[in-house]
Image (cartoon, rainbow, N blue to C red; front, side):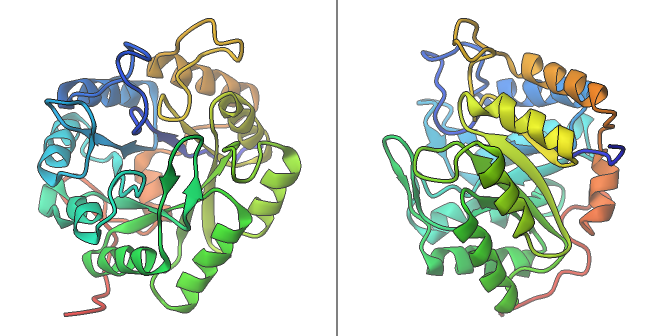
Length: 294
């Protein structure tokens, strides 16, 4: 398999705390430094979650995202940056859309768009049809590309609904997340059905929740897909949970597995070209954005 692979780095997430693992980056400086190391190892893009500097709880505050993005772009001006618009904690559109209001050199290239509501172990992520459509509309207006998150095949079908409504445009990028308790499970059948049902002109990566992370990443590298990897999805290096991982550990292992499968990393510049993104280096988001409301 010679097709180059997307490596989507997810350093923080919303769940890990310092009590769970000292390795998770939470402050602006910690996140920036982890992404710095990751970019030196080799990644295509980064999926960012911001934390409140006083409490370390998740925040939607665009000023904190701005500080993270500014720090990253100081040394990696081409790296593709996605800001999380998660509904796990924040319920109002103006909260979830706040990072999309950043402009110019602080503008994210992408924003996460979870394609339905779902239950995690202890909490729900609420994504109503109106919320999904409104976030998609704002992103289209601002030339920010949705990072389409699908936890089961029904979410892929909702993406096709958004296509019919002309709220998202090709090329598309999907994160297919398997192994969550209430969604598609981390096995060949569930992964294959989801991949097979993707719309034309889609790039995709597989992610595994918890112990499923390595299995799904390895599967994707073997069959030609991309990889979503990081402490957001699993804080452990081994499935027996005897060794806490660092993001550097996880990234290095992916590169080893990719090499064994004859896969090369898709660079940020190459991903930008495939996704019709601006070239970076001060200009971000999708080329020739189309305004959908005044």
